[in-house]
Length: 76
Length: 352
Image 1 (spheres, rainbow over the protein chains, first blue to last red):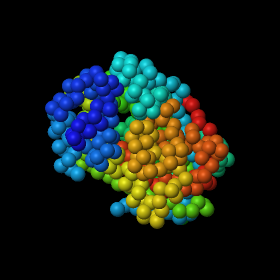
Image 2 (cartoon, each protein chain N blue to C red):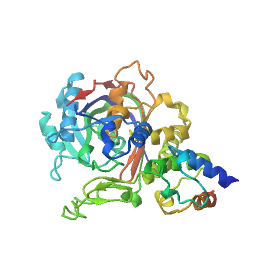
Image 3 (cartoon, chains in turn purple, green):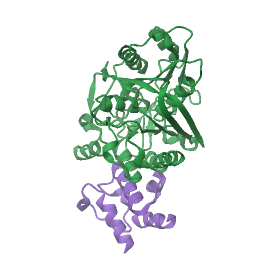
Image 4 (cartoon, one colour):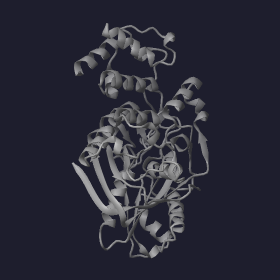
């Protein structure tokens, strides 16, 4: 449930969320709408919604949305 | 915890100068698809910036600002006992640029002068040095000049830095007087220096064919080793972790809250980031002046440039006795100062 909300929050930062399919096992780096700008928006969203400040490497080295969500949960 | 306190010293005057040449971000179509470019411009809040001509240095922009400041304040230049020039784009590796500015401004050779090398935290740091000299009984007035020609340090094929940075110079006069209290908080963290750096061209990695070889990063940005590299995500991480907390630390030290700030002057990094700080601090967005829409991020010059462009008209921001300024950037280096601009004469913005 929380993971689903996270995926929705993540998709909301994309310019055109309908152009991509977002699942827990999506490699978000390969989505058509992914860019360095989107990355910043995701960092801001995660900071605001979850109170966690991710590093550039957290974003770069984490393959899927599930793994990203796990990082957030583990740092809470 | 480096907290510095001064009483009876303050900022008497500020002037700033930008190059005439306007470079709009809408022209970066080769770098980003139209839709993404538009969104980038909207998010960073930078519509255009100013680029200096090839033969114009930061010192030239500062020189013009200093001349105007001297004229607007009917100054007897023989009372200037110290001149500080802070820049990462000086005239030469050697010698320091400050003595040449002493000479160009016609100040006597009894003027002490030196350069300081700092980036976006530079205005707050430089101001603290100016206050320290001004506190000495042997120094009457301190002229603090800071400017950058960032346009000459970046790659136009790098979508991280190309939309952000612009050029500007400034002059700030610091002296003794009935200014009230000023407190600085200054910090540094060299462990993450690599997130904002120019790896070649110094003495660790001297200028070499390798340093001038253009490389392409994972995002497709092309730059060489003597051009500024910035990791946007890590800079955001750095900013959000240190800037609001430094402001809060300083306020707490002073027994004040965010509501005691009349104005919060950010280093004009990019609007996405600084608006995020404002939200974090739960501060009033109408009290955070911005000039970056027209001038971009001018590194150490961005705070004095914002003072000049947004506060020269006294009707705007009429309450200016309790001003927080905060700078943060390469080093990593960051600092905040709580001071007054109530007695500050602001010159009109100049063009070079």
